Length: 371
Image 1 (cartoon, rainbow, N blue to C red):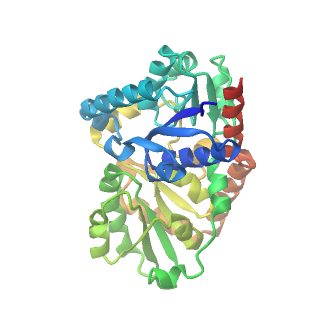
Image 2: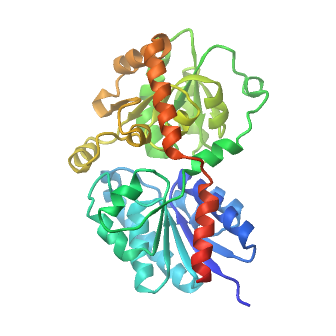
């Protein structure tokens, strides 16, 4: 009997993590599956044979994507060719909308069943993309509770499977000697999460570093990622800031407050119940384009899921040291303000439900493969 073949594509760190967990869940249910695709170290460790490492392709921001379009086209061609040679029984796309929606259309043309896990955020901008999604996918699995209702407006059935971050956090075990291991003092910790991509760290880190001198009674610790060269964090080290690599959950479990680049990390910070400020900055042109396209009132997952402002968002020109200082002071000294934020976190946890997203999605995909 021929083994079932699955092609899976993720395009950045959090997507790679979710893809790897899905692969692990599917492999437990059916150990005979063969996986190939595009991803990173997490997918590779889960048993995916990588045709492309996503770090070669990753881009962010409208202008940056425009300037890097030829590079993206090169990898689109490469992945399409690889899919045809591999002849998968199913294609699983994980997040990474710009790239994956093109792959979905290609797969549909070639009669390959398309499963989209963590669909593009079409509710945020250019909502007509929902029609394209409907035309090019067979099954969609959402990790955000409000998405299923949105997609229904386009006559698109979407399965809410829970949020995989709940499973990640449930699996997490705190390191008993986090302070000693990283030579960190017992002063209150303010965690700095500048992002996981080169362009994010380049845009965010300098402003975060400027904040440090304003709070002499706290220590700032950066959540570094090993997918970036350690030299990216040299300016922080020169400013006397500790950088801990791939210990974000340990850092959050000990933090008093956090400054977090908008993205998945904002939700992780909320689930660890750490009061936070959400920040974001990109090129002026990218921001101007985005401002005209975005159709939602917030950019952080925390506020979007809560459907109200739970955390302060300091975007572009608002991402300044005086505003950061004022907001951080409120978090550290205003008990009522902090309490309201934690109540908002409770609301988010309730909306997200129980979790088990990878297992639920794996079962649904395997059921469709049997049919």
